[in-house]
Image 1: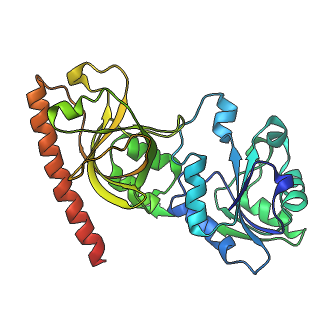
Image 2: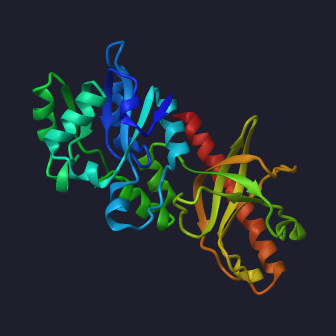
Image 3: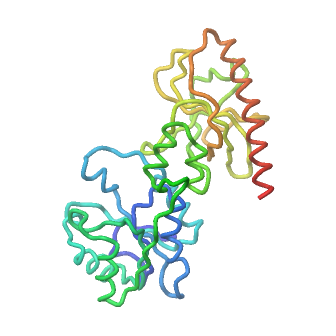
Length: 310
């Protein structure tokens, strides 16, 4: 997949899915899907913004459900041929809806078709609506798909609602809205190696700085790296029992031993087991981790069985 941050280097002509697409959740997939099935010759292209407009206007860093590498991997797996990361600058923010269509979609992208969500807003002060985009694009012979909102249990599926679910530890709801398990992808780095002293060695993950980290606590997870698919227990927290000061993300792999330093692991969150807590002794911590492992083993086995029955 071709990735560029300059619309002038985009491969054209294109069929464009336009939006922020943080998370590539089920609603996003409905917006992206139409451009994947356009006539041959139109590059299936996702156009998004960097930084996120909210980060640009507030000046505050924003944690992401899918940092760039993860977003690109998701889009490529869907069949997208191109990702264009428009630099969100003051100049871009100042474009009127008419100017945005003319300069970005017509001149640079040579778009033949555009797909957006019904709540899409664009142009200076977010004055342009999806209907405005459709009307303006039509004057240039560009067809438009406007995709309705997708809901889950009566609530709109959005990046914000998924973030809220993850920060509260409700990974099941987050995963249902994503259409896949929430992932943490990181390199295994050396930690304090305390886990191995109590019989539960862990892989200490280093994530991208802008990755959204869910609620602190213990999770049942599935872990993969090239050639391996494993079950595990992950702890996100400050390790209060051993007076830890900084947050760490540590994964204990069930029924597996080996050296993973320098490897990149993909950890899929399946079950929130319990909040982080402080124990009176390492023996109590050891007993709880053993119980956590049994919970993870049981719940992950059940979820695998159910998935195979669908």
